[in-house]
Length: 156
Image 1 (cartoon, rainbow, N blue to C red):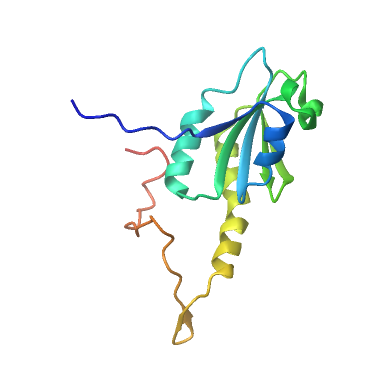
Image 2 (image 1 turned 180 degrees about the vertical axis):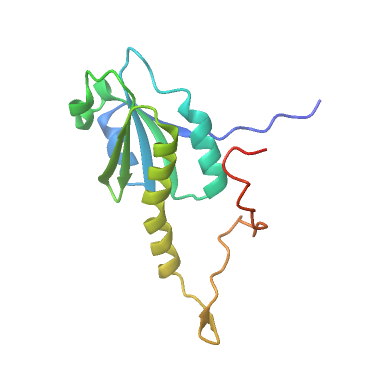
């Protein structure tokens, strides 16, 4: 029998104000599922987050779950009866998505991550050839064949 691969935890569990403050120091985009203790974090969104993580493949994209009753900074989100997703970059709240709307979550993640990745690319020294910039591939990412227009999200 083959050995099972050790799975890397997709979402960081935030259970205190101290862990919250540590999380805000992470570089990149942090997507937080702010949940109530009585209902738990939103489980259906985990597959979506895993798909996005696999597509983007960036160490600058983080996912977390935070119980609002355990984190003082989330006091304003207590008592809500719907999922709330908070987007942080540079320690600042940059977007909020209320409710489980997979297309909107995906769009918001990609929109908020884009300037972070562009800034990273701009910070690298970029070799030029004949006036054309050549960006190196990020580590661990290979170039993929172009997709046809009819091969949209979720097509088989």
